Length: 306
Image (cartoon, rainbow, N blue to C red; front, side, top):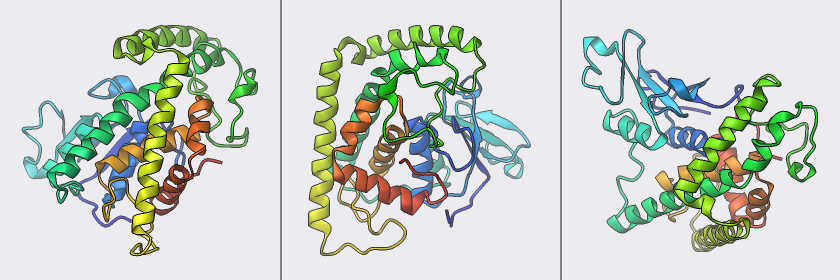
C-alpha cells in the first residue's frame, strides 16, 4: 500500500498473527482501513488487550519512544522536540485523537449536518448491534466447544464454509493457547462473554430473532450500495484510490462509516466462527462487491477471503 502522509511514527496493535493477514476483529480492520483511506503510514504489531489503555484491542502508539503517556494524560505530547509518545485505545478514539493532532485527514469534514448524522447512525448500527450479533451467535461453537480440540481437527462440520483448511484465516481464535490450558481459558471467556452480551441486550434474543435482525440490516445495506451503484454509473471513474468504489453515503470518497462497514464485512467474510452471518452477507452481491473493491484498492498486500 502506498502512503503519502508519514507524519510521526504510528504503531497499531491488533490481533493479527502475522503480516498480510487480517485480524478477525472488525475493529482492528476498521482502524487499518481508516488509516489507509487517508494514506497514513503505520506499522502493525500483535497486541495484547491487558496492555491497551482500554483493556482491549486495537490500540495505537504515536510518537517516539523517548517517553510515554496515555490518551488520558496527553498534555506533554509534543514537548521536548516531540520525543514522547501517546498510547491510544478504542478505534474511534484513536481516529479522533489523530485528527485533533493533525496526524490524520478528517474524512467527514465536508459532510453536511444530515450526512454526518447518517454517518453516525450507520456506525452505531454496525458497531453497537451488528458486531454483537456477529460475535454472540458463535460463542457456543468457537469458545465453548472448538477450543478443546487440536487445530488439526474440525469436529463441527457446519463451520466449514467458503474458507478452506488452506486459508490463512482458518485458525481458531484460541488456537495460539496451548492445549489443555485453552480449556480453562475458554470456560472463563465463555462465561464472561455470555454475561456481557446479556447485559448489552443481544444475548436476550433467540437465534431466530438475531437472524432476523441480521437479514434486515444487511438487506438495507445492500439496497443502499445498489442504489449508489445505479446513481453513480454514469460518472464513476474506474482506477486507483477508491475511484471505482461507490461509498456508503454516495460521496466521492470514503467517510468514517465506510471504515466501520468494511471492518464488519471483512471480519465476517474471513472468519469461520459465524457461518450463518457469512452466508447472509454472501447472498448480497453489492455487499461482496463493495468489500472486494475496498480490499483490492486499499489492502492489496493482504490475503483475501476465499
